[in-house]
Picture 1 (cartoon, rainbow, N blue to C red):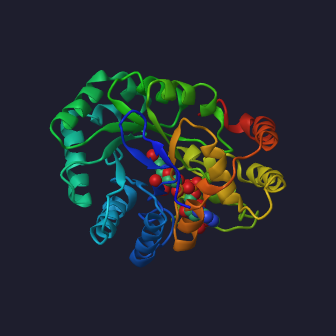
Picture 2 (cartoon, rainbow, N blue to C red):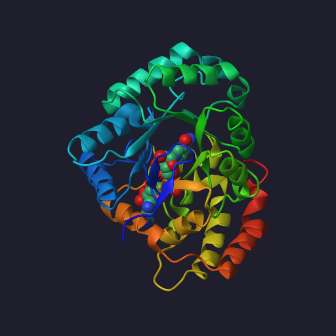
Length: 330
Ligand SMILES: NC(=O)c1ccc[n+]([C@@H]2O[C@H](COP(=O)([O-])OP(=O)(O)OC[C@H]3O[C@@H](n4cnc5c(N)ncnc54)[C@H](OP(=O)(O)O)[C@@H]3O)[C@@H](O)[C@H]2O)c1
């Protein structure tokens, strides 16, 4: 069975409900060879993935260039490739989000991806202030008019940023962390995005791997990878690493999830299927570092819907065990 297709908001484009997150094949996740990265992406595309998420800073452009190389060797329809801009700014401040800087970032991504027009440009978790600067969104409108980008969206840290961003008529998509350990977007944001026809991209769906059920108290993460260096938010928002849930708290919750799994269903697939229970989600973008992960993740949309009883149990688990650590922060 192929991957379920969903409307990408009001854009008129359909994408696979399971996409491919290309951060792990770019950098910050430990060594992934070019060969392994290409194989993982090819496996996802072979399985029917038609949405790829990357950024100009993943491996400083390596992720974008790998995607270009893989797509150049394939026949058939091109997937939608979403990239991001803003994080090359140093310091990363709202004042840096000028029309000239955005143009330069976009031109570099066009060159890396080998395209005239980017399918989707996302602001890459900009400072909150950026959402209150209409001129930034006017600059993005100009990039659409010039044909440098087909459409644009935002990647946000907080629900409030997403709600503010979708007030701008040109915002086609919002990327946000949404997973069993991050349920707050479900209460207001997803309904509001759906009402406005804004596509929602669910990132960090496996809570950086925790929701695969494979991690243990003594699991060691290689130095130089964000699960080691950003455990407490040393380099970027701590919510991007393990969804901001303290590791031991998360491990205990994972054991409760294990008890709820249908027979024979891997936890990673179950966690992705949980996200797809929300119709406001256009696509989920698990990161995959190898062929087996890409194939397994791509199969998640074919799982049976999760029962009401189990959905309720996961809601209660979130409210009691996880929400106190994350709910008010993001
Ligand atoms: N600010 C932003 O806009 C932002 C921030 C973060 C992420 N993202 C996007 O969201 C995507 C996904 O987030 P993420 O990669 O941080 O986290 P994630 O998808 O929650 O976790 C990915 C990791 O889980 C493990 N994994 C994946 N599939 C598996 C499977 N089937 N079985 C076992 N383990 C599996 C892999 O790591 P191991 O094998 O090493 O365990 C993989 O690197 C990124 O690739 C990126 O495109 C965007």
